[in-house]
Length: 270
Image (cartoon, rainbow, N blue to C red; front, side, top):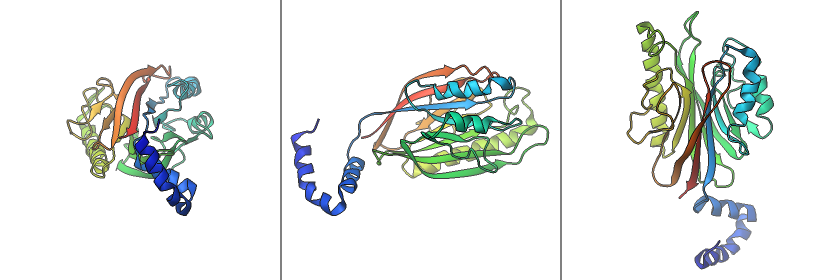
């Protein structure tokens, strides 16, 4: 519904629309004004290697993790010691999606699946540390900046990563803790860099530490899940863009001990 004031503003702007072009005028108006709440389902999904025959069903289950909607997914362990998962993701996250980093030469283990109603404004991969032979591949932190196709004033950063295992869980090996702490420091720096640029940040990942708190160290950073190693956190930035957590759930993937975790947010331009 439009108020009388809205109608007068639109009427006054009609002449300008001729100069800008109708599409240009509409986009400027949508970007500059408050938006409706937009459903924003985020999933973190680690596809392990224990029961390889279950992986495609697991990827399908992630695609249906918010039935009737297209989720944004941060993946971990893709192509890590096995093969075929890239093609499975491309198949089930098809022409309605973009899959940043899925075919990257080095940072492919932690890609995204992003539905097409979000524009990928930019991508960045951040090298964390070298691999450890017989134990861990090299580690990366991947990030995308996303902008809503209709409400172009809505923009946020999505970050995804996978920390080294058995530093602060499992065997808790002191020899691995330097790598884990390096990852944590860079992760926090990347969250804070986007926050300083005025963007809200949502991050997904396998942090391999059950008592993990926040990446940024800021009290404003919130956790969708407070336990376990598969996490979804978010850090708001100002009042222009509002993000609210509406609920959480899990998706049973039956590949190994990981289940996908789903956080249903809503987002709007205030």
